[in-house]
Length: 382
Image 1: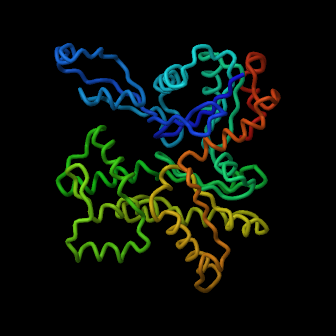
Image 2: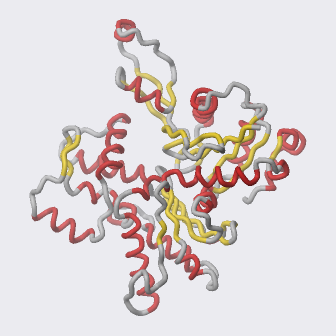
Image 3: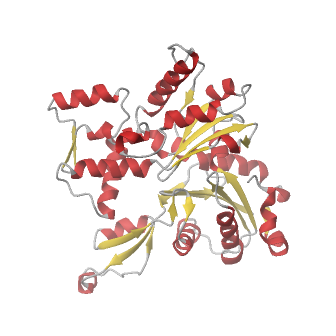
């Protein structure tokens, strides 16, 4: 029986067969062409479709404007019709499958995923796609498994949402989980806003895609925002040029929204404060182990300087609590930054699938779904 691991993120889908360590990655997006002149497509011999998904969008966007929607918002599916199109593209086009009746699928989910959301996903897998078995697991737990750990705190920052998940012996501590609706897409939008202020046009879906690529290539996290900002104002050095866009202080100003959202009018804790709160609210006998096993995962954590800034800010907060300054080493703080952390959740899924793929009782089967319906999902950690 084939086992599929499917990590459905707000911005990107990462999927593949459990035996494949590297996932197939494409945007979790649906595009509908805004056609004004069909004769142009006839002259270029392009067979226009009503809907495009994932990588197909970029290809058609070179010929016409495209109305792009994202079925997942802040880690939760909001558009089920669009999500079904994404899954169809995943299973039939990218994975090349025709019959899913002899396949089982491991679906990752964000912490605090609404029960109704999980039930609907399960119904789609069984009743629309015809899978044999389904398994649900928290993304944070898989991020930890990818590092070979059972206990630690995962900082998972993707495109649409950031979660901080303390985990003990493989089980997430629900009361101490922190959710921030600030993530990679906010950095992208902030970069676009800053560039618009200098006369560049970044207002369409396609131009936001360009802003995202600029972010991934050039943005970094400042270790001292005030000093870097002061230096940028006092100098006129051109930092870099990319595709006709000149980038200067925007490279470090946009990512600052993750650490100091209040500077940008956001009523939210920054990452360091939320992480500190999650650890301090954990049992006193667990805190030392959590501070020593902070694991980063998700594409947003790939930015240069991210782990160093997080470690530094956390040490400052610990110093305030303990009544004196100290270094991360003195406080036992260790932030792990796996090289493949943008795909850590998927990698952890392949590790877990290798353990449970043949254990039928670990999965919800199609028979259990027909017999018990949503009650069959009670076997998974909620």
